[in-house]
Image (cartoon, rainbow, N blue to C red; front, top):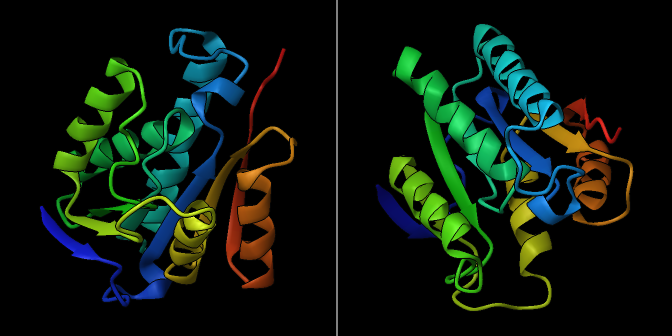
Length: 178
């Protein structure tokens, strides 16, 4: 894995997709990934990734948060197993992002980071704006945004609004809250 502090965009934007979605604690199933709603979301992510690959997308950027980001990153790894020309970039808001997470999420984070072709760290330490800086970095480098969104306010909504203003093609995946 090649690590760098905030890259300046070596991939073609037209062939790049990023992702935004809720963290595990905002998902109706929490950490229970056997829940049918979670399985449905993971399947939808995989289907969209296959469609984007068919449309020429080759580079995918993951924000590396718990929950939906991890589902996305792991689905890209599975897509790359089928198509070796796929690349995965981890966009990390600050060094040590995972430090306060549970052991489950922390080990998953490191496993996924090892699978990434590139690790982009936006800030050396936490800042109040680092999460939004990460989200803007991903949007500014991308043509497509996949959003797993439940309608609630927060970072996912803010990222979608920013992506709309930047003219990205947005693919919204509904989160079943029932």
